[in-house]
Image 1 (spheres, rainbow, N blue to C red):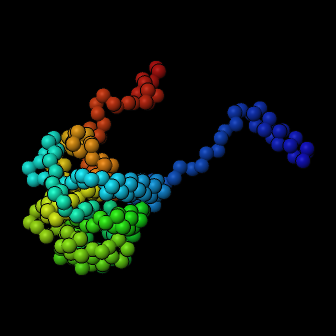
Image 2: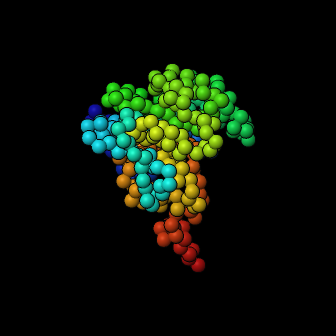
Image 3: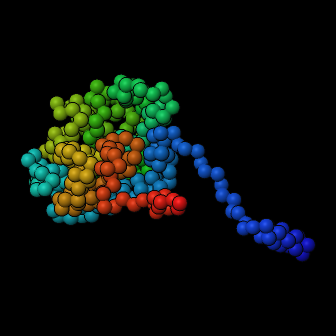
Length: 295
C-alpha cells in the first residue's frame, strides 16, 4: 500500500514538473438531429415528466378547493369578452366540469413523433396526421400524472370533457385512443368535441361555449394558448402574444383555473427569430470574442 502511494505521488509530481496537469473532460455529445431536442425533453426527460406531474397535481388541488367553495367560477371567456376586459360564462347552478385538450395534454403522441423524426422528409402533414388518428390508437401514452388527476377530479363529481383539434371524421379511433389509455370515458359530442363539429376549423371557442352552456367549467388544461381562448391567436407578433399572457385577466388564471402542460415539439409556441425572442437591451456578446486582436 505504502509503495503504491509513493508511486502515485511520484507520477503526480512528475506530471507537475513537466507542466500543468490537464483535466480529462468527456467528449462532447454529438449534435442532436434537428427537431430531436424538443422530443428529448418532452418524451424522454425526467424534467418534463416532473413538470407534467406538477401541473396535474396543482390542477387536482385547485379543483378540490373549488369544489369546497360555495360560489364556483367559470374559467371560460364569454362571447364578446376580451383579454383586456375578461368576462366569463355564468355558472348559474350548472354541474361542474373540467375541459382538456388531448394531444400533448392528456396523451403523448410518441408513435407519430418517432415517424416524424425517422421518416422521409417533406411529407404532407395533414394526410399523415389523418392516418395517424386512424391507426395510431395504441402508440400513445398518458402524459405523466394525467390519469391520476382525471380519476381524482371525477371522484369529486367533476365531468371531464375533451376539446381537441383531432378531426370529427376520426371520432371513433380518437374515442378509442383516449379510452384505451385509461383516460375516458370519451364519447363524441358528449365528453369529446372535435374539429369539424362546428364551422370554425381549428378555433375552439365555439366548442367551449357549447360545453359552458351545459356545465360550469371550473378548470381547463392544454399545451397551447388557444386551448384557453382563441383571443390569444389574434396577436400579430411573438412579443405581443407573450405580453397577452401577462395582462391582469389571464395572469390571474394561470394555475388558478388555467393549467399549461409542456410542449417544446410543435405548435404555436415555436415561432419567431432571434430579433423576436431577445430584446435589444438584453443582448450580450462575450468580450473575449468581440475584443480587437492586438497588433
